[in-house]
Length: 309
Image 1 (spheres, rainbow, N blue to C red):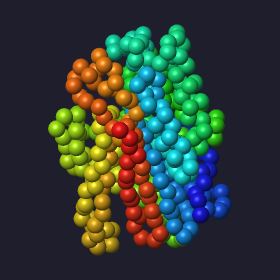
Image 2: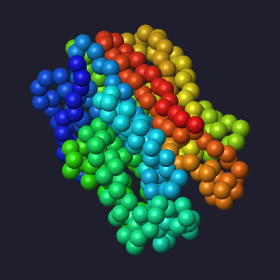
Image 3: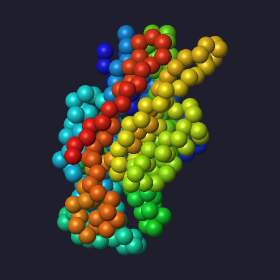
């Protein structure tokens, strides 16, 4: 039986909002801003089997954003009744008055207006409206935080606020934080913990493509079942096997998934742009898809890419 979303109120910072199960087999969404944790509750019988699309680095207002592929992946998530989490840099947002990186040649023509930020937010809402009820959160990236610092407006907050008017439960995340999925099947309850950080723990080496950040993050985020990064426009999935000790003193094994999503910006096609000047080369385009499956006992997590060339 499919899970359905139950609407909730969004808490003020430092407060919690808890929505109880309203009856039937439903996924109840509870959010908390006090400890940088978004909590998602799922309850179903005889099993939970759900997909979660991790989408980052869309750079929506850039002329290089591959909106066709982005829409294809969002449509696929909708067909699967999957959940969607939008990571940092949904916006490119580099053409504001106070941004030293501004280059109007990289901005879509319809956004070349005095009300640039307003128009981009409105257009983002229209684009995402069909998927609003599936979107759990929109997270901060360096492009959004640059606008907040230089222009005193939070584009991510404005997006989530507008999406909620279309039935979304979306909340605004941070640069890093946690999303905790609490899973209940009959009387068996367990959790899957996702840690997100827009950049992760290292930059983009042309040799390692950022994979070395896994070694750092594994030391200071040992409780995560999934660690998700974006920002560098590179892509990897690295499953790391671990030996654990249960609360009952029993050794067991699990997998921690380390994921970096590449996004949807075809930077390489700008002949005199940043990527071309740095010689970084073309990057894959797409997102990651997490599957969470639970009957009784420990949940199973799997991760794959939705990638195009």
